[in-house]
Amino acid sequence: MNRITKSVLWVVLLLILVFYPMLFGLYFTNIFVIFAIFALFAISFNMLLGYTGLLSFGHAMFFGTGGYATAIALERIEGLPLLPAVLIGLVAAIVLALILCPLLVRVSGVAFAMLTLAFGQLMHVLAMKLRWLTGGEDGVGGFPIPPFNIPGVVSIDMTDPIKFYYFAMAVLGISIWIVWFITKTPFGSVQVGIRDNAVRIDYLGFKVPQTKAIILIMSSGFAGIAGSIYALFQNLISADDAYHVGNSFAPIIMTVVGGVGSFFGPIIGSGILSIIDEMTSRYTERVDLVTGLILILMIMFAPGGLTSLFGVIREKWFGKKSDKTAMEGDS
Amino acid sequence: MDPTTALYVAQGIHGLSYGMVLFLVASGLTLIFGMMGILNIAHASFFMLGAYFCFQVISMTGNFWVSLLVAPIAAGFLGVLCERFLLRKVHAYGHVGELLLTVGVAMVILECVKIFWGTQSLPIIIPPVLQGLLKIGGLEYPIYRLFIIVLAVVILGIMALLLYKTRLGMIVRAAVSDADMVDALGINVPVVFMLVFGVGTWLAGVGGVAVAPILTVYPGLADQIGMDAFVVVVTAGFGSLKGAFLVSIIFGMLNAYGVQFVSQLAPVLMFSFMAIVLAFKPAGFFGEIES
Image 1 (cartoon, chains in turn cyan, green):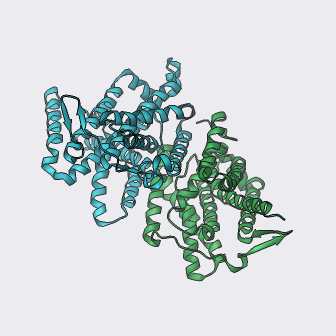
Image 2 (cartoon, rainbow over the protein chains, first blue to last red; image 1 turned 180 degrees about the horizontal axis):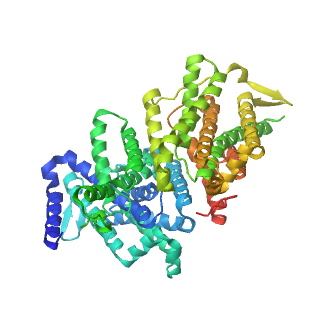
Image 3 (cartoon, rainbow over the protein chains, first blue to last red; image 1 turned 135 degrees about the vertical axis):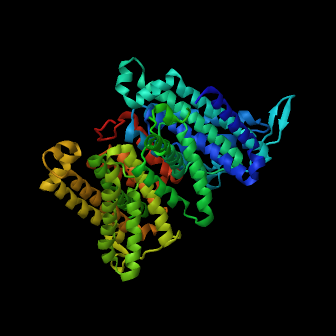
């Protein structure tokens, strides 16, 4: 695909994003915001699993911490502007990652998964127990949503869902772009190197634990942004919403369905799960049954996710070699 | 006997019985992990299934003892099916695939339980023989808790005998340390895996039946015990049975006395304990597997 078609595609995508609320109405706009939040969440998770080979079973703790930090800050600090509130969410998630780093970076594989699961559960317990801060089971809700304010230039009311949609798209889009940019830097290559052969990366003179720590911190930061936007969008964050283990499983399922190790896999996975969620919840309350079955089927029959399935189909039917770049879907 | 001592003893019994149930679940988990390298996220779901099967059998036959026999076997049988037809198929894709598969299994089991039995909690009545209190030396012990402790000790004694005194146990222990080598010696390792998985889920099922009358049966059961069992395995070191026993008892005690003295922070105590252990020994108390 050449440069022109590529840029045309980007413009089309941008136009769709801009006119989406007018085309599909409020209901689907709100679904789209949730989809975008979880797309960023899943991408931040995939920085760990797909690019570094670390399976995190407690990624919700960063998501939740970002959400709680933003919500509590807006509740307690009067007149806090919007962007600093999101920034507080980001910083809180990073601080949590910094605290856990010394323990987490020393292990990998199943031990890493277990430790993150345990710490994620600890955060859930803490959010339930520290009532004076987090409101226990009810969570933090009804906090003021400040307008998006550039002094002297513009002030946009964020309680209007359509306007919030544009704000969320901007923040999430920029975040996703930054992650994409990072994967293209030499640092991104070191990441993949750690996944494939940590010992060799060590021999090449890179510091594996420190690199892992940086990746973990970045990944948690983006999860924190996703959580922060989620809290703003719902105007509510509660322990079961944010820290529940199911929320840690969500990005895992999205990534596996979409495709591990492909940048756009988690976005596709998030989209598919949003659609499935929307379709099945009309007929049954047991949405998780469908999601669980899909997860099992995907792992059994298409362990590389949908993106690799596309590659296989392309190779089979059109005789094209599906190399790594084709799998990444950015061709 | 003054009331304070009586309280301490009562809490001790509670802690011990909870620790024993925890060990029933955690031992299966750590055995499966040590042998197959699979961290079975669905393990607690089999525990929960044990409790639900117990409820079902009791409501059909009215006999607790029948359910104690049948329910764990049913849970173990499902475990065997799950290993044979799901996990074995994805074995080639590595441990992460297996781990994620068990996540899917856990979700499906939870939803199926909700479909079949609903979301409300179902009470199970303690059989009359085990109701009431046992008076020894001026102290009163709740009989059912003592029964749980005895049951767990008997089962674990039999398991230990099987594991350390029989040829089969020798094969299992050998497969834990090096499955490829055992395979090369001409032993059908997949069948041994299936057996271990079945026994592990059976143990979880026994744990489920044992706690069913105390906690009542509800869909959140898996979350509650499952997380504790995982923390036990992490703290004890993956694949270590001795460690799992020790840590289970410690956690049972922490839980019981924690509720007594610092009720607000009781659930956090366990995690703090885990964090402290891992800060000094990242592989856990008795862990040898680094990755």
